[in-house]
Image (cartoon, rainbow, N blue to C red; front, side):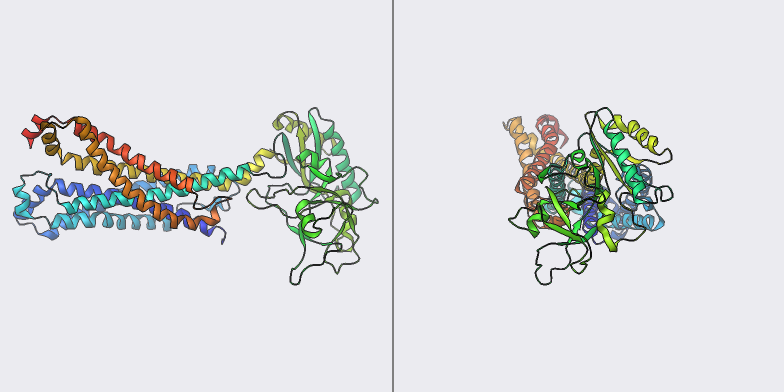
Length: 555
């Protein structure tokens, strides 16, 4: 739960940002509606309607709209849950418990009411404080709307642009982080590799000899399949996210005080596993058929482990044994090979690794092993082929059935699929935040458009006079675009500063990416500014197409 808290907080903030932009848009539209109806409101006030009546009517209108939107949103959420849960990554915990319960329903309805109050309160107070004589003298024109109203609408748009920039920057960081994760060296190759899981029933495989015979027979049959380059088995697949750490003792290593136990990832492998998985042997050799029960006990270690315990030395010939230093009765295992680090999870550093041949795993466990522990009785088959992995699925199952017709083979998948599932939660997070960012940018665009369009509409008479006095239509378009650009610059400035602080909260969610990445911040700022200018083009075109004679006659 502690690991998921930063992600949940980020999603919550993203939802709050989108909700804020929607509220700002709605408040701006209500304010425009009040300004357009100033004459109507002044007439109602002149005929005896009290300010509280005007205030109440606008609040009720806002509450009806927000509650209706909340109910529609709940209906869409119920539909989206039915579809969306099926699209969630299988590695995401407790997806089956995701539902729209009554607590969520009441929370959403309560939030809708609060949203309506928030959006309608300022416009309602503005309507209630309308000056009767001033509004009636204007003859219904909207061109003399107060500067205070204009500043409030502009402030709302600037706030929208600022929070949209923050969310867009967060999306950009997650996208870069996901790409970085996809580019890292996993320590093995994922192409043309087919995997499958098996578990030998204890009733038919009650001895280590029976398990070893199954493993040897399986290795021979898989290796003979057409197109197969190499085959082997492992107790734990890399990038699967499973498998614990085991205690071991390196010979000749003197640990510093308070260093604790020596831990390593210790999978058991058989056959030509390293070649099948595309793991390169840096020094020494891979396991062979000679590494069996009764022969000298051997292991292969990772470079990270060798550099930590034997820095500057050749690890080949060094020895380790399982268990703590006090377990002196356990046999020593000789290092015969060294590999590069293999990642058990894509976004975590490679752990220290010790590979053990499954045919010797029972022997070297010594007195620490339970009598019921049998090496290699379950694990994963790994095959590297010259053909697409899916084409070998049937042949793999047939090979297993030829040895044991009753043995099921499960989880047949390519290594590409396994790594993709490992990366699925981070990909899901990126897609979700990007969706929020897209919604925020779209709402901000609508907000800019509505403010610039209304401001331009109230200046029709001014534009007509400018045109009549000789101003060109391009200069009129430039005037309106400049107004929009000023809003964009202000919003981007505030948003850039806010992003510098907000991005620090995402340190735990990104992978090998600077949370203050200048490229992401610059790109997000540029996108928001261009969107602001884009939203101003249509109102600018309308202003430039005003007919002076008609506009002055209608004024």
